[in-house]
Amino acid sequence: MKGVGVAHLGGACVAAVSAVSFFGKGGAVSRRYRSWGVSMPLFVLGGIVVHTIEVALHALLFASQLGWLFGTQRSFAFLYIELLSVFWAATGLGYAAHLLAASEDNAQLLCLLCIISSAVLSSVTMPLPRLKRTKAFKALYPLTYVSFIRYSIEAAMVAELTHYVNIYNVSVALDIQGFTRDAIYPHLLKIAGLGLGLRVFAVLLAAGGRCRC
View 1 (cartoon, one colour):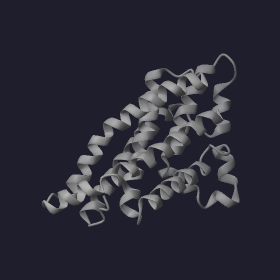
View 2 (view 1 turned 135 degrees about the vertical axis):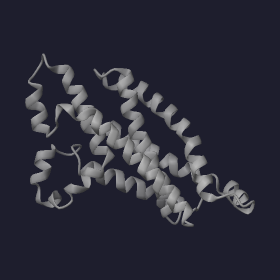
View 3 (view 1 turned 120 degrees about the vertical axis):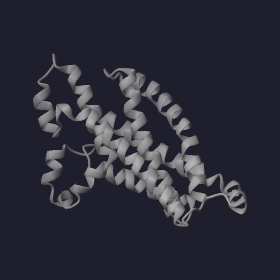
View 4 (view 1 turned 90 degrees about the vertical axis):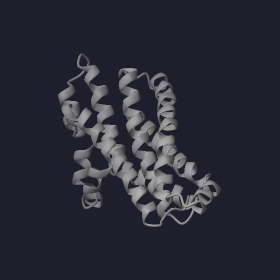
């Protein structure tokens, strides 16, 4: 099951960095549009819409490789939706980081820091009940409620564990991890909401004059 966390973590890092690079390569184009009087929020929004197609294709490619590599019991359709939600949220983080950071390199580092930190505060490192009892992370635990990495890993693990009811007691396994059986689709919706919120935040940053595109 650790492979699920590593795969989601790696995919999120790649997606976020690609989102930063997507806008980083368009500096000359954005300056030209700005000189023509084009609204930068609209420029950023247009870029986000266009990049969504690329995000969907990347998730499709990643899902095809992940299903073969880990031998998951989840259906390909579910695996694709799961990874698409992760890529959706991660690219939203990349857009916002690009507009907040002073350079493209700093934006990529910011994305990696946020994703890896959220992974440490999720079930990638240890089960959530143990994490809650750890003094070093107890004060930071509320941050996991806005961590798409936590939600994606929990949804993936619950979906995977439900296919092994004939092997071991799934309810006990879920309790040990601190998961609930009905958390799959609510968590995927939370990830989609976080991705949408980050996109709105990026457009608002552009409207406030933070466009470095």
